[in-house]
Image (cartoon, rainbow, N blue to C red; front, side, top):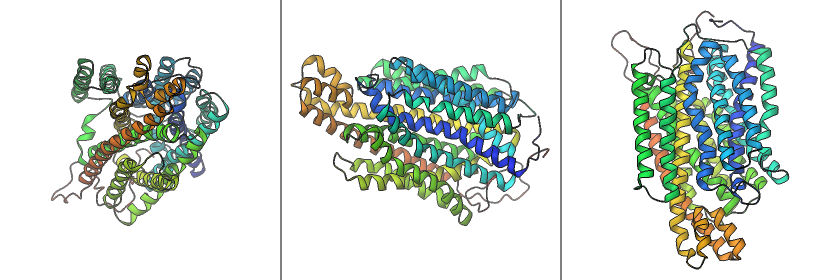
Amino acid sequence: MTTSPTLPKSRQQLILAVLMLCSLLIWLDNTVLSTALETLADPVRGLDADPAELQWATGAYTLAFATLMFTAGALGDRYGHRTVLVTGLLFFAGSSIWAAYANDPGQLIAARVAMGVGSALIMPANLAILMWTFTGPARATAIAISSTSAGAGMAAGPVLAGLLLDHFWWGSVFLVNVPVVVLAVAGMALLVPNFRSPTPRPLDPAGMLLSISGLAALAYGLIRAGQVAAWSRTDVWVPIAVGLVLLAAFVCVELRSKMPSFDPRLLAHRTFGGGNVALGLLLFATAAVTFYNAFYLQGARGYSPMDAGLASLPTALGAILGAPLGARLVRRWSLRAVSTPAFTAAALTMGAYGFFGLHTPLFWIEALLLVQGLAIGMVLGPVTAALISTLPLERAGAGSAVTNTVRQTGSVIGIAVGGTIMSIAYRHAIEPSLSEVPAAAQDRARLSAEQARHVATVTERPSLAHAADEAFVHAMHVGAVWIMLVALAGAAVLMAALRPAGKPAGPVQEPDHDLGDSRSAPGATSRPGG
């Protein structure tokens, strides 16, 4: 199928529901893992995973997700987006079962890589099918509605994970993906045409190899810095330098290609490029602060997984309300006037983690998380819809892959950098409390607050457990400042990207959506061959 048929409205709505279910699966898995991190770190109830292994369990998934999406977009254009999406769903289900029964952190990390491959096949195809199914203002509305699945996943994931962790072993949190996949595959088979681009792009093995190896080397160096608490060692700066060189080579290769799978030229457009960079920085900050929050609530505050899941609900509620609220405000004012203040508010809420302590009233934590979710939703929903609306329909797979790759890359680096800052700050803070701890236990206590608490229990030193909590809170405060600065930089980039453009004196040679001053709903382009 090379052109988009006119589908009945009822079928369009059912297709949207199926696509939201697929998107829900991705967000559900992300939030489920966040709730399980503290349990996975536990030497008795989990896998005795250290902070670096937990960073890799989270980051390896996102790494595969980010670097394979543009290849998945090309596969969808060539073989059909439904075929690719269903393949991704089946791959995701199989690797979820593998993750559930992993025997050690290494197996879990490998399974998470496989899950990332499945997600990479799902997301570009999901967005491409949405763009082929809807047209005009209905497309923008569909994108905005679809974005609420993120909030639903954020809401259901922590509570579901908490319920399972309170009653079953940690692997059960991954098995919840299987029934969702069964429903999604059935819906895809019954409802969705196998849309594909009339001009399929060639596969890009060189670009895929360079991007995967570059991001992997960069993430390794950043995470290694947290393990050794130093940036000057060769096993830290050499991988970082190699990663940056490989990523630069990747961009050069893609620029020289006549039909690149990941087209950096799209990022040269002020609005599309700047908007994507800003969202990448937002996802950087969000991933880092989510990583902190999981250990703060369950580790430092001592909440059960279920209580921690319930405590995270305001973030999800805010995200669910923020996306449609942001879209409504954009229609009244402009995207720039709405998204930039919301982005700034999100950054400030992340910096406010610097005021959280071991006895901060839960009410203030919940209020802050609600505002944070609301602000993030007001940015992600409207800005994503506006950026996607600038893409030509035949480049849906490629353009959505660029958007998602930048965002997921931000998450990979956010987890690596955020976790490393926390590890370094924690080690410096806990060191004075280790002088009387047996030498054999000191190295273990330096790894993380979770390990220090375990040492405190075994050696009957309650003061060490308290010192570990205090050291973690100090590390979280240090990280919160850096995360806030990154998010504020993202707000500045977005404000610049969405600034109103002057009207051209002559005919416009290339479509340029002035999203900074647009008051009409984005996505009013028409489909060819409709």
